[in-house]
Length: 319
Length: 117
Image (cartoon, rainbow over all chains, first blue to last red; front, side, top):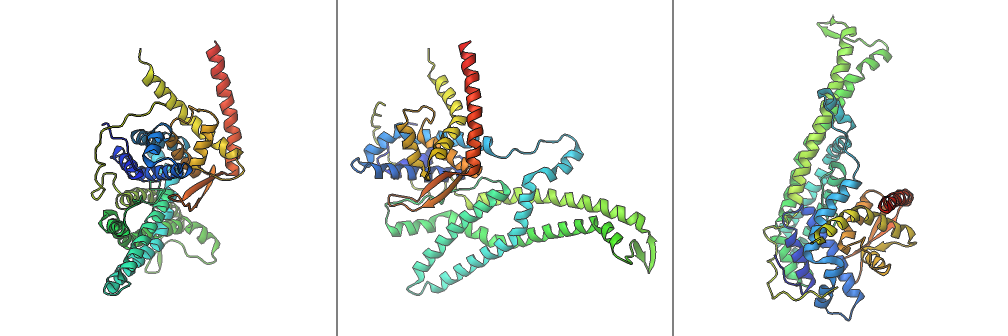
């Protein structure tokens, strides 16, 4: 596809977005942000050059929209693979796979996320429900519209924050830059776009969902950890506590002696601990997918602006 | 004979590692934080460097160096557009830079020796 030479920064960014259609949505968001920062800096550094001329020159330095798209697709993959902490080596034996979960850094990130999810879930839920309720209530007053706009803006910022938490702890690629907002359009259009953007609503849905999900994650993690640690340390406790009566009792009679129960408790505790770690890693992967789906905008999303109007392709100046 | 696509592919593969080294050394040398555009212009001044290729390739690398803990970053508002992200090498970054330079020199010497035959 031979795209026309863009005349404005908005058209350039639109072409980048188009060329990146189908790429990871988080990569698209970062690419647009970087390109805008660079183009506007270039424009500010050369105030005597028109926007169209600057964009024609930029094709040889920063790259044409298609080249930029290719670079983000490739560089992201290569560099992040080279710099990311190595994944633990895959183990071949069944026991190795089962116990290897303890050596996987993602397990502990996910476990920590599960414990944190109660707090963040309560906060996101409260913030969203309060905001929506106040927005509806204020809608009949003069402060209604500014309040709604302010509330939706906070939702976007919180979405970025949650994205950072998810990427750090769960290892799912999330945007590292705020969503691209079109500049140079009237304020009302921009506000209108906030409401027609499906991501605003899916983010709200995610924040409301975080209360039940967070409660569930927290309960699962705390139950698994306390049960397994309790069983593992039962023999220790029994040895150090004066007059501890270990064993299984029935009607006051010791039916199974401590010598049998305590080793079994230790073994079961270790088993439950590793099962908990497996569960944490699985929950982390699942939740990462949910977050990526609801918080990151699709590259060819429904409400995206239309493609740039086609013009006769201008000749590219020789370098 | 059309060697062009092969040259481009080779340059891209070379750039994958060297861009990170170049960026880290630019930021390691600088005594103040720099932002993406500034770094790109500085590399342009230092000569028509084929190592950087298109300047858009610098940004993802900067971001990855940052997430690897080699660079510090902070955002400052600018009058010309979106807020600018300034980068500065961390002490880990400076230590890694020394190691990378070592690795680069030995690779370069090895390749030069092999090419000389």
